[in-house]
Length: 619
Image (cartoon, rainbow, N blue to C red):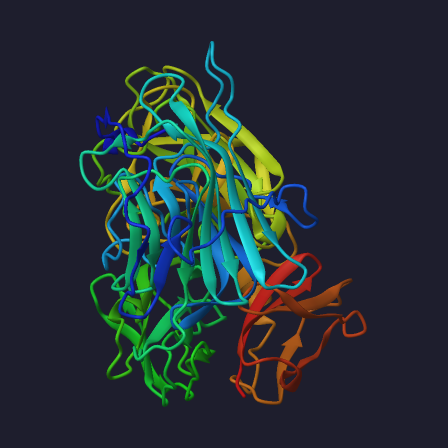
């Protein structure tokens, strides 16, 4: 299934089944490769991982998407850095960063676009093809397995067809696997079955096989526009030594692992802390370097800025830096938090910076509309999927608790067939805060949508959110209906594509936002409102803290329940306590010595009312 706005008309071509070259390299780092037709090359030996203990099905693969991250199971040495997590791309590759590859596929290496991946057979493959009249559902699968010795990872693509324009929209069959070995840092591709051919795109390649580093300037491509034959094995050999020196300081994330956009209450008593994670992604020790952070308004006006020195970092080492100058927003609107490493001599400037989208909202009003888009539909054609059964999704985290989700909004660019659309709300109680329980589903009936306009649906009943957030999905009810997309930076990094009921990171997440909004309201009659309740709690002092930090509170009356939970920047609860013996006034003490350096969120529960405070721990 393809985005209608970006479809090419393909012409099927016959591809050669065997590349005449049997070995190659080295690249500038030193990698070489051989296939099993070369002298001293690998021996083809297919490993069936499906029945093995610990093997896991990679779910939610769909058309042109990527899912993850998954643990490698051991530090795998790739070029000059170790990788410990990976993503699986439905088009026959794995990535060590969250980036998609789609037809036409790039040459390797290529600095622009997605980098840092291993492509066993990057081609226009098709997972989760729906059953069509006269044609069965395809049987494509992907499995992953790490051995007990924690030195081998295998990812197997099984019975995966190619995409084609005509019904049933898939053809052929491919079964192949990627093997990562920590024993010798090698990478092996094995091809068990290859039937049929892929389409040749109007631009780029139909098939790419190879490996590429994190900057896209180094790599090997044994095959291009040539399909590997059944029974072939290709092995990439890590160099015994290298003279290639890399000094590279990168910004990993701002505020949260995805650098996901956030909503902040205007005049919040909890200031925004500029927190960023930086990493030595080179192979040379780095001395301390400057890390620059700032918050800017939509016109470029600086709200707060600060530069701090990192520690000296060894290759692969990560450090979280919490700026000591807080930001207390007083004016609602769009802001950005920008952070960058400033190491002189950095070899990969493309990974130096991260930008996080911030929205300050007025939470004193009766209703608060949460929106990451600019309100301008900037993509001709919008988001529309062939087949008429695709969709899009967002993850919304409200700026206060508890709140009621009351309305769902979608900007519909066009609905030529008057099919309408549906919207669903899911709890974030799935594994690792993924979409879990369905909370509501509402439909804009056929013939009632208003094209080139916002369309609003009211939830069946108000949905109360007491913590975390919700996933909101928009789904086509048939062919042609298109959702508006915003192409004006900054971008939220909170978008998902929802195809055939599966959720995956949106392939254009870093360059587009969907035009989906929600409206929330305060819970009427729910104890003391947010502003008043916050007034009864102070801030942690000292903050940042290196040992103990204390938060004082003085409530106007006794309460039945008073407790708190501390969460780290990854969302993991690190401490909790019930303070029922302090029901009126007192102090909350945190032993910072028992916590790692970083930014923590303290969620205080007062008879169901939520108060949040931030604490920075420094070592």
